[in-house]
Image (cartoon, rainbow, N blue to C red):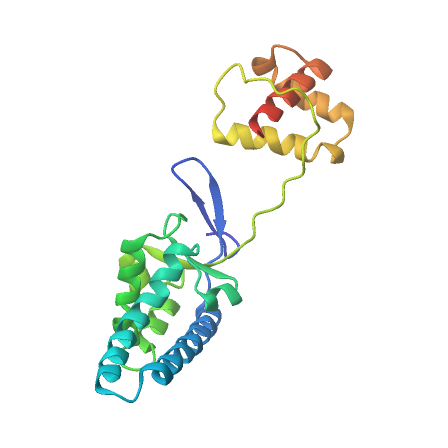
Amino acid sequence: MQDGRLSLTTPEGVRLALTPAGPAPRAAAWLIDLLIWMVFIWICLWIFGGSKLGSGLIGLILFVSYWGYPVLFEVYFSGRTPGKRVMKLAVVRADGLPVGWRESVLRNLLLVADFLPFMYATGLLCMLADQHFRRIGDIVAGTQVIYFDKPPVRKPLREVEPVPSPIPLTPEQQRTLLGLFEREAQLPPERLQELASIAEPLTGETGAVSLEKLRGIAAGLSR
């Protein structure tokens, strides 16, 4: 945990910097979702109300929609209900990967425990005591709520003939190589060639020749 951001590395070697969301934005997202759900229920009452069959149907819709609303949105919409989308939040697993059915169902079923004794008092106390602002449902399900960051837009690389890498590159090496050519406009040519010479074990060359070989390998990685 550095500067309020949680640094994680996925099994594929991808490094993630996640910012846990505190109680205030999560409460705002919950209120938005609650209002949307209440409007949905009001529409159902208007359509099905007025008969015994309608009353039974309304009871079933109340139960299914209350539990199904957050689960469906979290599983099918990248961990974001409409309220979380408005507040730029998302639910992810503790390792930073998207939540699945098991995690989402479990964390939402335990909303009952977080609600006790009134108005999510237990959940609030739990979030304040946890350094990742997790409520009981998050701790048990292995999830956390984070601020959703849009992925940065990659700058297009210069058009060159792609060539395969002579040796397999790790995800970290691939990212480093692509990052070099994405910001090459900010580096002087001498510095680029100096960096390319460091990659002599990969290209078998130094200086400008090594740089062009690296550019071809990077073009192959970006396609």
